[in-house]
Length: 323
Image (tube, rainbow, N blue to C red; front, side):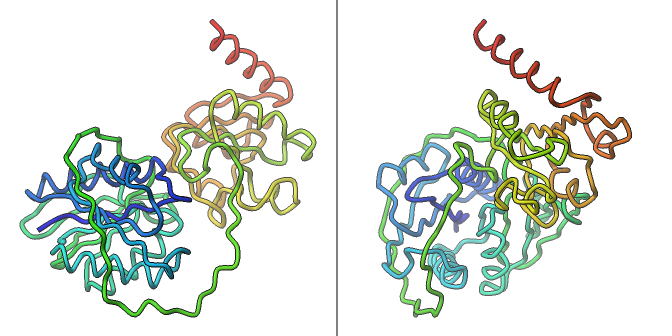
């Protein structure tokens, strides 16, 4: 018996969210009296795979089949399901990332498993069932999901579970499932954002709206983000206007984020935007309109001109770092 965790790689490396799901899987395994097995698909070095042992993984199934070089949810789900069958996994954990949101339901269907997407805390064990708290209604509410099937699939919301360093001796074995992995999907090119910090995994996000007045003023957002080690984001009207690329758009129709700190500058706070950022642990709003909807949900609000406040904030942060 084991808990299986899918560890998604990006160009051969692991992001923080991978170590979060490994830590989460280890905690679930301790609850069930089981071990943690990870399944990795793609070209990842032995050294990188070995780092999973720092977070409680005792075994890694390494899949390097050539036609799985590019992500395809139907084929990846088949491989993960095969790994779950081989290991007798009762619980399968993965990140509720962009690819995880496509994988989790496919995986649950293949395994005839219960599914809890967007989990935010460890499950409660109730006999053979697990009770999982998850986000719902575009992160505006929580639901308690009862998982009663023999197998359970849980996708973990990024930044919702702390890293737990639990050094474990890890074995790495090649895994080649006997599956027909032919598919018609052809990936011609993958273009990734060049930000220093990935938006989906960022612990701090600095976001700008139409209050910045134009793309020529975006240096304020980028400079503040650089000082804080944050990712940059924007509201939908900004991306629609072409000021910023669409991959920076956060909100109900963009990327949903769950950082520890979300700073909204010159964003009024339309309901569609709030739906994508409401899971942030701390929200700071800077807006010259005291009636801006963002102030109703923000933990901290500053009423004033962003062109006066942000430079002073940057200067204060730089002074603090220098001191």
